[in-house]
Image (tube, rainbow, N blue to C red; front, side, top):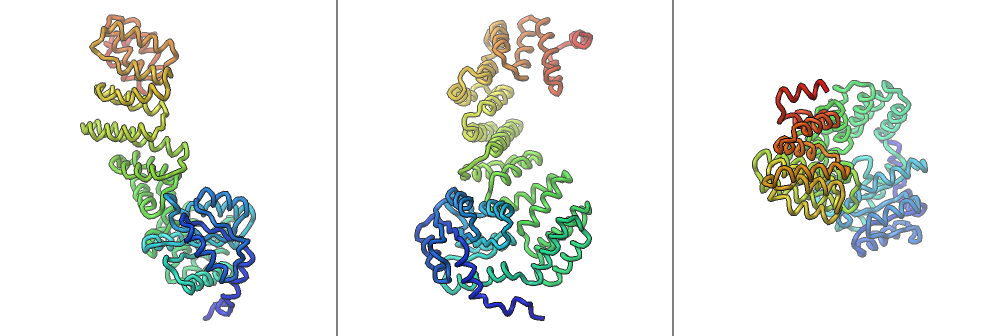
Length: 450
């Protein structure tokens, strides 16, 4: 049976839609922007209602300023993916209660086109460069027609979403199931079916729905995200990591996604993957504080792993990347120095100590690092003196206490060592065994009784 939308004059719908809305065109190349603008003018768009920009930063500002409904974006704008604009547009859409936004992705190869298809519901259509006027027109007519006059499949999904948001889960499931019967590749319906099941705590069923959706499109963005959230919440970290890696492989990185994959790479002991994520990290222009913290932490922990594996050159290489990524954050530089000192690689600490001295001279981190890198061949009493001075300067660091306790014992200051050990184990109970490792049973009894 023919759908009601078959009788709609798509050409007139496109003309009306373009002429009545503000259009944002994003392309790093000026000729690319003007070419699209010229084509759209021939389809009915008004030039005074167009904004042409060359960066995503400008695009975000234009979106907020004009509440743009129509976006034409090149897949990659400089080193950034225009897919990141989708969330900005969605936020504005929710604030303004707009339902007919259009996001058109301009792709240049088959790989980008595959990603555009997988971003179903977020990307309304895509155009492959180089494109003809006729090709562009047909793609836009279909996209606008579907947006303004959705077919039965999409109408059933929308009805199901309304029920889902109202908490009417069984009724929503019926709508999504009906939608599946209206499409040969009902990936989107499978995703929402899984969402409803997840909300009903039927997690096994939800996982099955997401997997069914992925059987139609193995990199479908929403199904992958739904599956990841489910696996992560169930603490199935290895499976969740595999899903997140696939997301990161096909969808351009953004700070939030990269933070998640970095955290999971450490949780699942995939230290060798951190290098590839670092390469992605350096290409991101706008790095959040959270992303920088996760990147530095992942590199630092990976470096420690390589030291355990006795691959010192590899560890130093990773630590150097961590030092660069930290952008002078002293806590990460101190962690690197502490780790190298722990593995008795004091000869490797100079570059990191020098960097710390430049960015935070005289800081508590700098004082701690200087103490931790003191030559063990020095007179023990001198080392103890320096350690005591560090504590008086307000340095509170478990590695400083550990070294000071050990040196105090070697210098013959047993009572002082016991006092320090007692203080340290109360401050950091999770590291108690390290503070007490050089003490006799008799000494331990004294601390316990104290």
